[in-house]
Every structure is written in structure tokens, then in C-alpha cells.
Length: 100
Image (cartoon, rainbow, N blue to C red; front, side, top):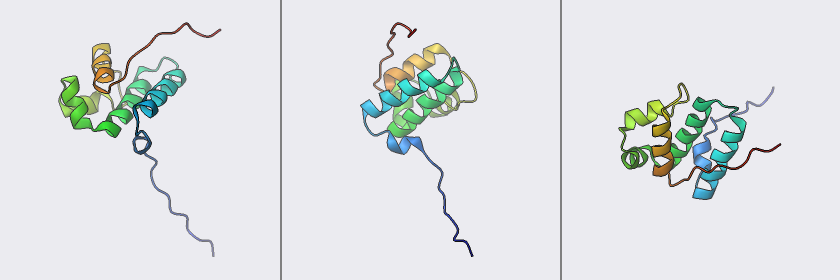
């Protein structure tokens, strides 16, 4: 008889503890996104969840519900929303020359 393996849902937000972790995660997601804005929005949602959605929403000047919708990964939020959330998360958006 085989022993049952118990699994749990992986939640990346549980592993985003420091601003450095959050920045590295967002950077990696931006590299993997391939232009998919909803994918980046979902990454921002993971970081917002780790920091606390209520506080991030307040700091971004959005309702908690609007923030959840914008960062669900089901749609692409407006760039103004992305910028407000990045600022509320205590992160900065940087530009560097493309590789290659």
C-alpha cells in the first residue's frame, strides 16, 4: 500500500519578506513576462499580498477591491495604477539597456 503524499498550495507571498526579496522577484517576473502586462500585475499582486493588501491599497490611493482586481493577473491594469502600486510597495522602476 502506497503512503499518501500531502501537498499544500505554494504561496510565493510567504517568501517575500524583505524589500530585496520583493525587488528580486519583480525583476525576475519582468524578465520572464515577455511583454505580458497581466503577468507583471500578478507579480505585483503577490508582493502586495506579502506587504498587506489593505496598507498597499491605502498607500496607492485605491480601494482594496480595486487593487485586488487590478493585480489579479486576469487583466492588464493601467500604467498609472502600476506606478502607484510600485511606489506604495516601496519599490522603484528602473530602465537599463536591453541585452544583446
